[in-house]
Image (cartoon, rainbow, N blue to C red; front, side, top):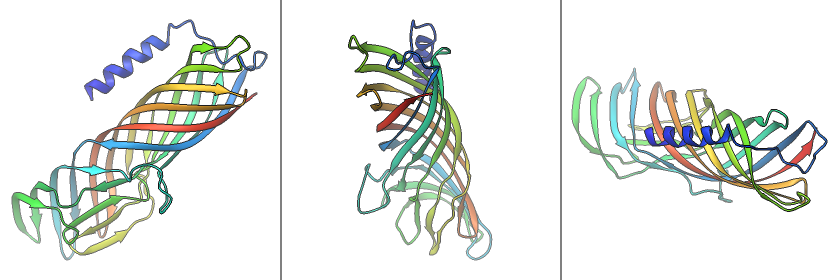
Length: 258
């Protein structure tokens, strides 16, 4: 977390005083409307997962330092991991506002050994256990889903004389909500859940933006996030967890003067 915040502050402070100008492809316009879509890879830190349920069986326990992974980027055999955004850049004010949505996927790694502490059916446990599908399987597999509002800066790095081709440094910071659709099987109780606003996410993103053919651009960025899922759904109960993540986004988009 300290590393992410340090990088965010350093890059953002660099962005503010820079003698920057917005993209000169459309020199007589007040701003630029843009949108893009693409895919991503994301890497999660281990997280503590707490789940609790009344009824039969009843339980309230925490699994420590659970490892997880994404689905591996854009896959055609299933609903892919994807990202999209839409925004407007104010040329005179030298910043933009953007809505960004990440359909990320999260799978708890099976057959890992973790420490479990809590109770099941009134019996207390404080021991290591192996996560197998018959006992604990958890996926935010139709998306762990970040919905974020970002402030955006474009800082020019290079351009040809007529500004037909431009390379910009892209810097973003923002926050929003997490809206997962959780698929879980815990002690034989399965639930493929509905979408549910479960908490919040904050993040910082930076990378490069290459503009060409006036209306087209591609971006490659790295995003660091902190996501707090304080209330996701399981069968008959609730769960919570939080993580830090590093994410590589690859996107293509279009831009138009307004």
